[in-house]
Image (cartoon, rainbow, N blue to C red):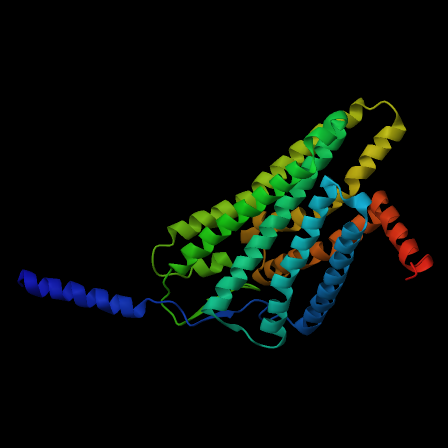
Length: 329
């Protein structure tokens, strides 16, 4: 066989492979398969979403309306509430449309948009909880220097830097995904949304960049935040042991209780799921992750409302101003 005919065979083979490897027309979201009575779960998620939107809207409204809450700490709380509502909006309506109404075939572009928004807001929710732990660390360990360290400007810089970091990583991750090729026109995704992991593992070409992002993202949304929060509360615990009066110790502990509950609600289920990933049933894992995406955004405003004394004072002040002593035009 001469060199010319050999080159023609290689070209023809490459052309055949290029015809077989392409961007899929649809992704088929196959989560929750084979689970009975799932319609009730979807209805439950619908009510969770309504409560999430109402609760976070009320929380942001109170922060905006009461000047006493225009502090660096409540800038972070406002950012958490905004992120919670955005994350819940990215997950639940799409989930209900996919499974409750049977629209499990999602076009390629819509799937990439869904992946982008879910990854962005979940990562930002995690980093905002980390920012709040930094606020509590300075407030309790360095109370005399708190107003010099945690200012409006420094808090805005930290929040802006967090958004920039997460946005950049998410754009890079989705950009790598857009370069993947698939051997099927319809790719099955065993998850409750356009999940990054199952999609990139279904690709036919080199998916190494996407695998790097898949390892990097958990380190950002789990590893670094959890390590910093543990470090923060270790320092806070040391400071609390040094406080002599029980009243001061109780007051300092109370300021951290709401944040600790938020941290536990968000990190414990997702950390447990990823730690025991190979040993958990697929449907159990999907339900657990969907609840982890849906419940913390609903519970965060409720916990802050009832467990933060200064916020309750602001709510009562606004209610008196609006309903008991309304202004007359």
